[in-house]
Amino acid sequence: MTPSQVGCAVDYEDYKQYDAVGLAELVARGDASPAELLEAALARAEAVNGKINAIVRPMPGVARERAADELTGPFAGVPFLIKDLMQDYEGRPTGRGSRAAQGLVAARHSEAVRRWLDAGLVVFGQTNTPEFGIKSVTEPEANGATRNPWDLGRTPGGSSGGSAAAVAAGIVPAAGANDGGGSIRIPAACCGLFGLKPGRGLVPAGPAYGELLAGAATDGVVSRTVRDSAALLDVLTAHPDPGGPYLAARPEEPYAELARRTPRRLRVGVSTRSPIGTPVAREAVEAVDAAVKLLTGLGHEVEEAEPAVDGLRMADDFMTMYAVENAAALAELKHRTGAGDDQFELDTHLIAAAGRAVGAVEHSVRHARWNTYARQLAAFHQTYDVLLTPTLARPPVRIGELDTPWLTRQVGKALLKAGVAGRFSRTGLWKRSVVQNLAPNPFTQLANITGRPAMSVPLYRTPDGLPLGVQFGGPLGSEGLLLALAGQLESAAPWAQERPTL
Image 1 (cartoon, rainbow, N blue to C red):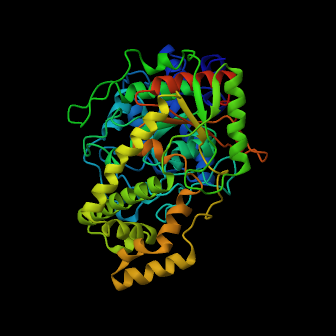
Image 2 (cartoon, rainbow, N blue to C red):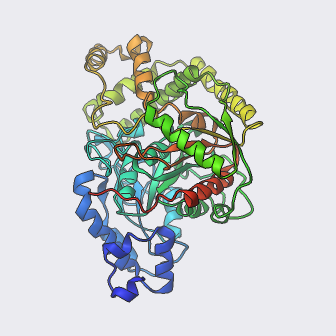
Image 3 (cartoon, rainbow, N blue to C red):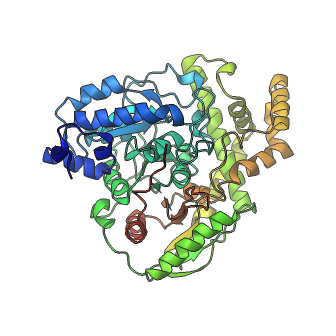
């Protein structure tokens, strides 16, 4: 039943039945107007955002003006949210989850936002993120914790936790996200959504940046359906960025078309072993076991295998890069805003101090090892089309569970006060902090370091009813293959209509 059959207004019961592609089709047929869809989304946000704290920068006035315009593009009139990190909206602040950036107004749209707007999407808010996106939970001091719609006591993941919570809660069918260490896939896994991290260079990062996190990060979306993610990837990759550092190859056919294809018989290597040697919960193993059963039933060949990568060394190299980039981001924001040290979180200061302690030669040596990991993963893909692992090593953690331990905080404060905080990165506390931070999600960083595409697919619920996704990674340029596999899995075990009760 279309909205035109039940009355001119689009109520939430109508709205929630459609993904973004479906809503665009309603507008194109004249069965709903952009203004009607926007009001339905705003009403849902009003009803649930107080419980989940997903949207931290509402933009209803901007959105209503836009919805009244003559919109064009494949998603004309569809409500949308962007992440409050690296997704600049001209004339609006991009807070980065930090008190220091709250008044820093964007001079122009980022390239991803411009492409979403060119596609006709109606942006009506910005979603919560940890400070600088450096955590796998979304609990910034500036905006407060975002909560998982499936269990309000648990995290929706990070750093795109606000976007994932908004989609899971039914505010929008898809939302802007980005991923520098798992920040699309981790929230998707926590919230029962689909999340694809595209490969390096495929999605433009401009105009303010050539690439994000030394090429480890990329923009994308979290969504309820595979076809939404595929069609929105077509939007983000519609044409090259003339000022960008890469001209990434893309398939001749649209990703939306490839997602509808039945994939050939694939050889899948599967591992549930944490690459950093930390525990993997029974539920995470069961999630992979369920995926293996489904894959086998669909005719794919599955066997235990994993890349020959030193996971602990890679994790240390990854966190070193993160620390250096965090130090640069903090320095840049202090320079631009004049913000004092009290405008940043303690954890941000400690990570930045660790980054400043990394010498140029050490950083170069560590960055050079990214090539080693990429070639080791490429060797794995000479035999296996796809790598299957858990997305998370355990179900979504409770709010506050990953707070920095008291002892670490006290040592860090003392070192900062003494002006020698860089020494923190040379202590056992730093090494333990690295492992503690990555232990709940040790499987996602490999795709970022190597620049390969990877996706989280919501194929499993824990006995308590919590979502827990599984991750598939592919070789260079395999976004179309991964989307085709995801579409096949979605048809075999549909998930889009499963909704939390708020």
